Amino acid sequence: MSNTATQTETVNAENVIRLFPDVDTHLATSHRVPTNNNDLEGYDEEQIRLMEEVCIVLDENDVPIGSASKKVCHLMKNIDEGLLHRAFSVFLFDSNNRLLLQQRASEKITFPDMWTNTCCSHPLGVPGETGNELATAVQGVKRAAQRKLDQELGIKARQVPLEKFQFLTRIHYKAPSDGKWGEHEIDYILFISADVDHTPNPNEVKDTRYVSEEELKGMFKDNTLKFTPWFKLICESMLFEWWEHLDKGLDKYIGEKSIRRML
Image (cartoon, rainbow, N blue to C red; front, side, top):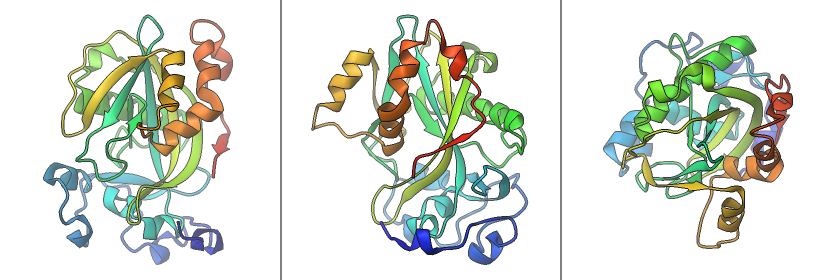
């Protein structure tokens, strides 16, 4: 990864357009087509289309300062200059407290074939999924989580009602996928306990698996398996402590207001 990110100025509402001309300072209500599609040559057509989705561009305090295409937000050349966006990670547990994992499809442009938590994606710069204050932002990511659980795993909204999602905290992290793509996100961590029916979308999900705590720890010892960087960060720092309190005591972890910096 380039070291230039530590030498660049902090991105804020005043300088974001100068630094990133592809950012729209008004949250978009429709998709913006990437300005240069050469970066996407050779990738899956559906995944290219999804790169036109509009992400919420943030300052370092999680305040929305604009929007940009998913493509713009995930190019390492922009990430190394400080471009940051909002994301969420869902951890879905069944009635036996097993966590549903997914293996990302080979067609994915970022982090293909890697195992990760139930669903990881982005709220879009559209009405209902945005928010300046923490409470409205949390509601926005819950709506986005419900939308993506259906799109990726075929889990219907009635099985994952908004009120069942629990917001724990936010993490700020950065990770390269390859030389071209990567992530730089403030990631909202959502837990939900629900027995669901799921039918994975093969363009998004290669495989799924329910695991206990011990089974997941065993997977981490298997050198043939690869895991997304955000999932590893969460597992190494917080997940297993939260998991132990899933039935009793989780309340003390709910609704953390500070952002955990994991850079």
